[in-house]
Length: 349
Ligand SMILES: [Zn+2]
Image 1 (cartoon, rainbow, N blue to C red):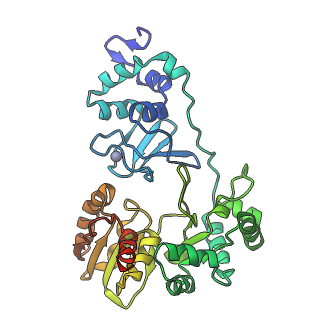
Image 2 (image 1 turned 90 degrees about the vertical axis):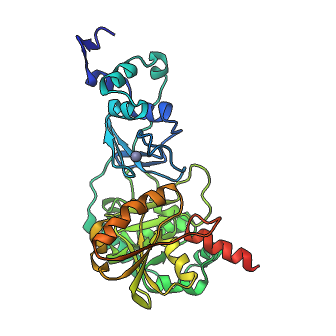
Image 3 (image 1 turned 180 degrees about the vertical axis):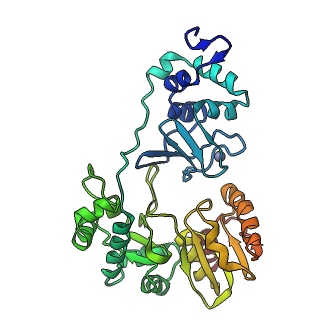
């Protein structure tokens, strides 16, 4: 240990080199594995800040790239020493000393997960690819209608979502979907748009045939058309973060919801409010809400821990823009709007 310590100080660079950050996440914070591996970064559902802690398996709130972590839920970030400091509630120096004491053998046998390489994406090409896929929409796929019906969404609403270019239904069979993507956009454009990794046999989107398109067609989300199995990544997003939007009968009354399925669920339950679907409860930008001054805004983010936490941040932003804020109260047994829709359907039968 004497080589690590210089007098009374600890060499943090030595600690960083010895203790991989992902090891700390997986062995100390109890994350079993990354919940998402995307280009150049890994995501975990746990945060070193004990007040933020472990979220559901679907959460990807904390990113780890190389030796830095960054939590999108609480805003804390740092290196492995700062992670240990938060987790153990010690000083930075004590955290470093404790990390240096970590078992060599355990560290040696640790295999760190790897993030796929970062590629240079071109957003202009992505926008073109999105527009081409929207234009290439023909008949609404039966599989999509059936899948969304299983989530409580009527075929009529699914067709309307397609007509409004919120939804594109791609071929359900991965091979046919790959051919469709290739035929419509071409391989080079798919690669430059970031949709096709150079080492992959097919674009990941080919396995996720429900394509939800953001307002302004600047970003896109591809979703599985079935219940995800453990370890499955249910949806992939490409492009800058942007909201899903549905202009409805009422424009002076607005509801904010989490994601496209909840947006459709709110419509299915009969809301007349216009809808803004944020891609994730922590994924929104203040500037999306500038036009909400004087309007009645219902916050329909999820009723679980992360949703409630995100609401606490959203409320002052909306009120700051002059909106009349209300929080939607999910009924007992429903965490989100789709849960509620499904509950209503069950109770009817
Ligand atoms: Zn956090």
